[in-house]
Amino acid sequence: MTNPSTRRDVLQSLGALGLMALSRYMTYVLPDKTHVYGPGDYFFESGDVTHTAQNKTDAPMVHVLFEILPVELKGPSIMLPKRA
Image 1 (cartoon, one colour):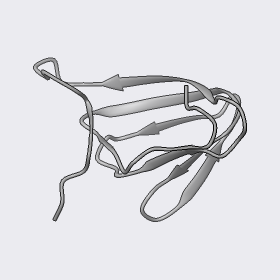
Image 2 (image 1 turned 90 degrees about the vertical axis):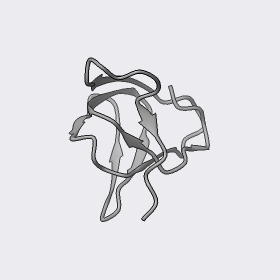
Image 3 (image 1 turned 90 degrees about the horizontal axis):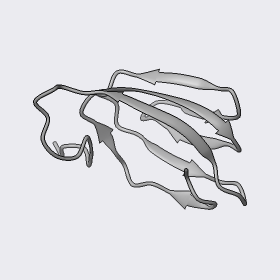
Image 4 (image 1 turned 135 degrees about the vertical axis):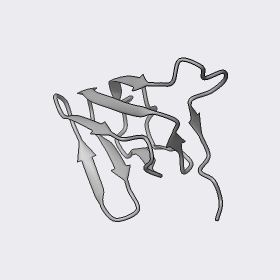
């Protein structure tokens, strides 16, 4: 769930992920484009993409998220991107 008026810091996943929006809308900001996902929308990301997620609505945005991660991973799977 993403709470109302929430903006996540710039993030990157260690593995591929899929997300399906169940209610409300999420603004997903990529380096070169922005998408707004609503109920029933689905996307897949390769995991090597830096992004932010924002809930610009006045109610919680509910979604299902899954990640495909290396079995040897120890620790968190979502991280701040590496700085150049």
